[in-house]
Length: 533
Image 1 (tube, rainbow, N blue to C red):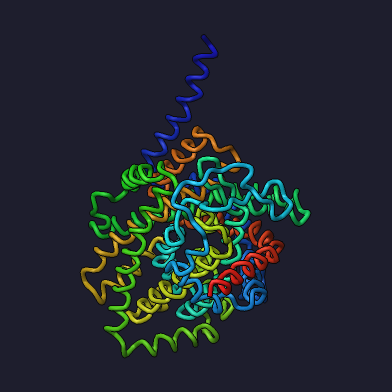
Image 2 (cartoon, rainbow, N blue to C red):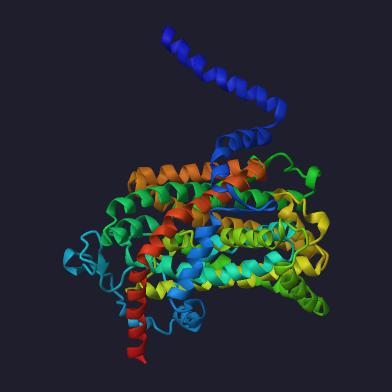
């Protein structure tokens, strides 16, 4: 009886303490403080700055990102540019007949497996393999990248680094096309396909299987486990909490700000979003792809059209905007530590936006229906171009043209970033903040459902592919939707960025080692295209 009473008190006392703290501070503030205290050490480690002189400090994680993307660009002979039109033709379906697809369901048996790498863990299935089309894989991956990083992330970059940060975002996007090509080719090459056709793929699998073929079996397992942990954290952070947090910021602002019925009730908005997210993610990648291939093109068209309207309505300022971008990239005066500081902001926000080199997109692309891994790598290289070179640049031009890259915005905090972009559009289109709010909510929604798939793949790799484990993860994901809406962005964005950049470290090691395998697949696919012609 005494033990029973002690166990009750052990539960009640912490609960009463929490309730008392909540009464004094409010639930949202308390969640933020607890979350910040729990994740601060990790954020500080990932974003440790290496000092170069008195003013310039560079995040160490940017070095593997930039150097890796540059290496792949030259190793694959400028595939970013030479493969561009081929990529578009693949999405259009011009080379679909190379796949030799069948209308009936292919029976998967051991006799259909071929072992190209003399590796018993590598299974290749001839015929109709995968779960989604090239276009659906592209939109599923784009739904995780085109979104709030393009809207709020760009505002953060240009408010800290000035207009010049836009130039380095574009450079990062162009270089990132090569990284995305490499990781998504590997994602298809080393994927697992279950007997029922369900696909499991991504860095966890090409790090273990691929590095095993190169004689680095133990290293591959360690890197894969690290990536799996980071992708789960990234799905809860950048792919979940950051998205719902920024969506709530805009919804609260548009409904009255401090006078809004939602003011201080981020948890309520999060709860509503969690219900809708939960309904979709239960269905897996096929259900996610069906939603994203409708939402993403529609919302991108609306956002790009509004951006173009603002830009061309002020066509006389376009030339000056590009002059500011170019001059600011190389000769900024006292902005965030000079040119290096501007470069850092540009690359950091571009990486958060397009995720090239992070490895996340390879998880979505691994589910594609193809027998040529390089074909999906070619499709994937379009993502950083669409996401960063096109959409991010348009956002930056809107901010510059409307005068929202000024000295007074240098102290802009992360929570205000989405509002800065909204205000920029409002100055040109008075009613557009209402449309932008809807777009942001849908962008956030599509990003969350795609990242739930990424995180689940890491979860399944670590804890198994049982239904129990699947629903455990999806329930946790929905809980973090509520937490993200309630926490302040200060804690959320630090954790979001840290987890996403942490994913890049084990992934980039694997990409560099496995680059020759990708070149083999590229040559194989290009030979098939030439033989068709």
